[in-house]
Image 1 (cartoon, rainbow, N blue to C red):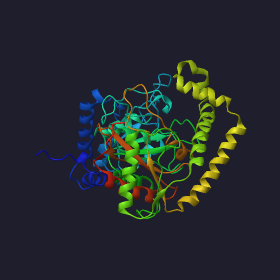
Image 2: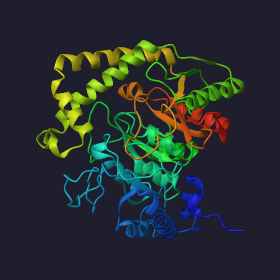
Image 3: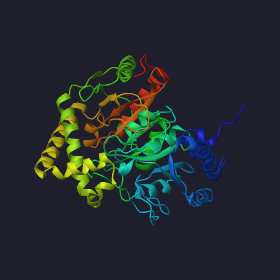
Image 4: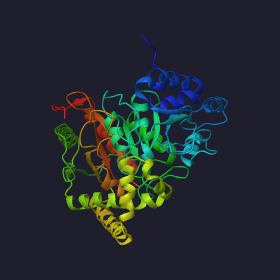
Length: 429
């Protein structure tokens, strides 16, 4: 029988093995690199590997750096600065010169003992133009965008943890398509210094891991568990059909989740909030366009060098007047106040993380529409893996809660993951 690799253990066990001397950070790093070497010709998840990773692992093994993530190999999305490597943002127009300092979130990871392996593929400036990454869980299908490389690296078993980001659906969708767990952190929970953003009101950091349990461990290691770290409270089921057509397989996945949650606990109801959800989704698009062209003014002079979707976003933003932008922010705040009453500090929303399984091909990354309302509100969101379509493609569900209740969101996500693990829908699409 082949002995289980330390790299395959849950994050808490991996870190404990390194801390207690049953494995070394250098050995775990070598295992991760070996898997990258074997899988990268097929997956294309990485932009560059960090030559400083050996030094970082050596510091952990020498006891100069330690913490709850000791020896854990991590991938970092290539909009996030990592000292010694360039930040290319999935674009040829960015500088190829290495940056001098790492982003605050990278330094936070390293302070907890993590070993950054390298930088993962992103779409162009974290928008729609795809990179080369394949979906390890659904070959021939998109891994989603824009945290595609991070999600694929975790799904392929190359690293157990990766950093991504979300402005619209950039983390939730790749997690759903690749069959991994993902968490969009509450906006403002971590310092975004050193990250190339697109929209300050919308940009959030996120985590990708193999399971919700690993996500919860990493989130607590970085910023604390948050309040309500139990699975108590009510659940509101959201079907997503108020925003766009949900594929039959995804509709079946939501119905399955509802059925199993209702059998497992009382307090499962329906989200009746269509008007707010539709308005928030529309306002998200307005705010994103308005802020993108003002956050990245240097791109306005290079529109002919950008992809058509990004160019159109910036042109749209130039046409949005300040009064419309301010009105969208006011509506956002009103909806947030109502949601706080609706969830009453103990509730969460469970719904589809994407319209369906990953679309075929690599030319599109799928629609982010089901993430737009919640991203505008800056909420913590966990993508839960477990259900697959009839043909085997992952179908992620999302658990949405209020800021400050991250522990409850994660607890309910763990419950959901347990209830839906290994299930399939009847439909392929």
